[in-house]
Length: 101
Figure (cartoon, rainbow, N blue to C red):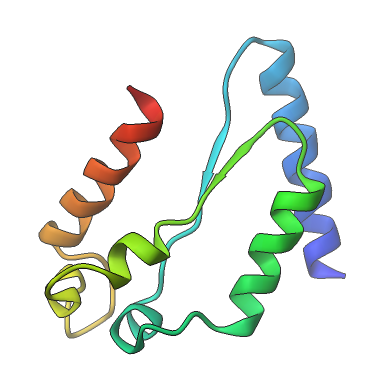
């Protein structure tokens, strides 16, 4: 299946990175629909569970809860195409700095 192939490829990449002494982080991008509703889709929860249980040598980072708890989650995404706005990118960067610094 598609998720099996994704897991296989991620494990190949994380294995090589580990051999080279590189730490791997996989960041799950929260969707604007989920953040605005405050409810994560079941299929996205399943992907996260699969990654957590089957990907070796990588840290899985899911910023959904941090985005959901933002005082005004609408400003984190562009209204026209649901990509991160500059505020959303900054919010994500601040969250990720906890893992990288």
